[in-house]
Length: 219
Image 1 (spheres, rainbow, N blue to C red):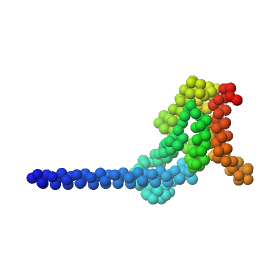
Image 2 (cartoon, rainbow, N blue to C red; image 1 turned 180 degrees about the vertical axis):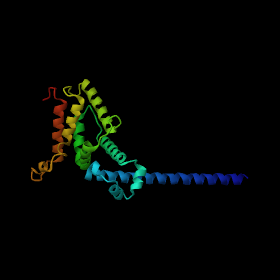
Image 3 (cartoon, rainbow, N blue to C red; image 1 turned 120 degrees about the vertical axis):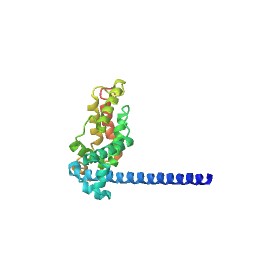
Image 4 (tube, rainbow, N blue to C red; image 1 turned 90 degrees about the vertical axis):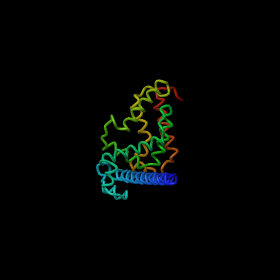
């Protein structure tokens, strides 16, 4: 009886191990498929915008079916929101916001946009077509948190108080995106010889410094 009980325990442990392995494999396939769908959706939105994006093209590019996409995302809107959240998190991880070093933040953002031109196009499509609930939207929530942080930096004397925090953030974002969003004819004015990336970053940082320290006596 003891031997039978021992074998029963061993068999149950083996079954449990197989279930864990099967579950891990299923989770990995789930994550892989979801990542392929998000990547295909991002490329589709970059090329065609939010309204022009088509689920059938996304499915084909992701190597899956429309039905499978809807098992991961409830609707096209849900998929678009997932893309927006993913790109926002990527940018936040790559370029951490620092209200006490806004000049450095702008410089890092210039570098990020230089390396990720598709995100520039995405931001424009989202600005034009994405009508999110500001009370629930993580991007709007992140902006609200940043305005609060800038306000605190102002009260502590690190940022000039001339600017309302949201206005200042918008101006700084405009500076960071200025070259990335410039029309093609601007890039062609120098006969195809673009200014070095370091030069563009330095110019953006200097412009940001002058805003951040607008009312300070800076030489």
